[in-house]
Amino acid sequence: SFSFLHTTSTHHRHYHRRRHHHHIAVKNSITRRLISTPRLRKMSSIPPPSDSHSKESKQQCKLVDIGINLTHRALIKHWQEVIQRAINVGVAKILLTGTSLKSSHQNLKLAHEWNTKQGTNLFCTVGVHPHDAKHFVTPATTTDGNLKKDETDARTTIDEMKDLLQNNPFAIAVGECGLDYNRNFSTRTDQMTAFTEQVRLACELQMPLFIHEREAHENLVQVLDKVEDEFGKHPPVVIHCFTGNLNEAQVYLSKGYYIGFTGTICKKERGAHLRELLPHVPLDKIMVETDAPFMGFQKNKVWQI
Image (tube, rainbow, N blue to C red; front, top):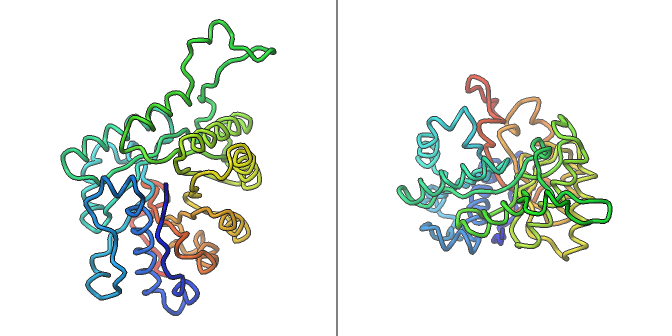
């Protein structure tokens, strides 16, 4: 689980005046969260970060990228170079995002290949993105609730996900799952079904949830609340690649969820509202991610905050 250590939130209240110190605190916060997780700590050769605020400890601070789409066609052909470049600049751990059963299998294969040869740097989520919810397989039932005869031996998506999550040491979270009412590549009904089942699986296995949400805040919260009522308190949740407003962020924070920020926050116009709400997010609830190859910058142009 995301059993993160708490760090001071002093800096975030003075974000505009002390952004350098805020940056250091955020990096320490992210590192504490993932490498203090019991399952990750066992597999990691990196010791928990020191509480010392000396110049030396800040220079040695390691980052964790909680989301990269390594199987995307823009990265897969040179994926090892991508990972090595990240490590070279201080990214100690990288979470490979599973958006379908196919990509989840591929990510686990890549993580195993890298970790057995280069060191334990890669971990994976296992899940089905709302865009792919139309391919989510559930037991076909008749009106009386019984499985159809030709479906009794069918293997559901949840069955396969459970196998991957329970039998792979590098699979540490359920997702990327959620709701996307912006593009609607899958029907909202299919999205709700796939998301609900994946939240239930995370509760059953007590594994963190890596969640995608676009213009679906109310329905997403409804699903999480409903499943929480069924199982009791659900595992830790991160709302990845957050692009919502302050009110939505406050709802997530009130429920104890973590907020993931991408490079969008550095974009002059698209990131303006995120920079405004950032001081309202406690440091121990902030996560950073590239969501590569998405949410980046054209021609390497970055607006300087």
